[in-house]
Every structure is written in C-alpha cells, then in structure tokens.
Image (tube, one colour):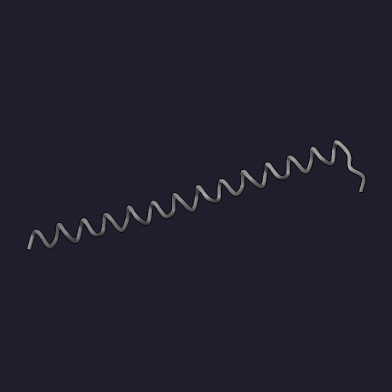
Length: 54
C-alpha cells in the first residue's frame, strides 16, 4: 500500500484513539483500586469502633 497523506492521517488518528482508550482504562483501574482501599479502610474503621465499644 502506498504511503499517502490520508493513510498517515488515519494511522495518527488510530494511534491517538488507542492512547485515549489506554488512558481511560488506566484511570478506571485506578478508580477501582481507590474504591477498594476506601472500602477496606471503612471496614477497618468500623471494626475498631466495635472493639472500642466493647
């Protein structure tokens, strides 16, 4: 296939789209991990409160 401006533009656009998708996936993973840490923290805090009440 010949190297054309349209081909280069499409390749550049595709690469940008893939980069945005990777960044979104990374952000979603980060948010999921942060939510898990918050839940673990909340559970630990609740357990400490129960232990303090006894």
